[in-house]
Length: 208
Image (cartoon, rainbow, N blue to C red; front, side, top):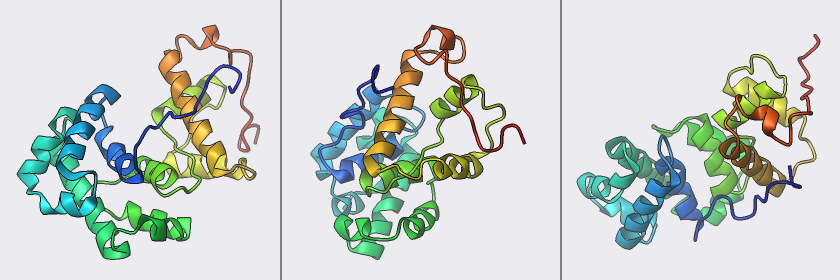
């Protein structure tokens, strides 16, 4: 995949806080809309969680409206800000030093956060290696021969057990290239036109 795709700078952000907010804003929309919402959020708060918590719910909803689903997303963003305030006093460096399994459990407990968003926050905002089982990876693995990709947590466990030598950058790049591939080729229809058409994925539970 490295021969065909360049993952550098795939998940952009001028700060870790911007990356964290973008994981919520990107849900069920596109980056064009997210960029508009992020520009407004930066102008209003500088991406700082304390400033976000100082805003009224109505104002925050107005600020992030371009990303859609603004009522739900505003509440989720505030829930995340509260977590980092109460748990780490807004100190992301302190959060990044914590055990990733403990962090993942805590982030999954935040209302409005599911496994996919939690893993993206961990990987890009808190610098913990995680495999993100998003729709792009599910479609690609199905095309590569992994029939009936299991639910999120089971699929994640199987995949990560086979990525034991991966560094954080490896995880980030793998996620980026899978999503870039899915954006370049409409799967499964265009898979046979891609550079992966002659490859087959072997998984631990196949053939058993």
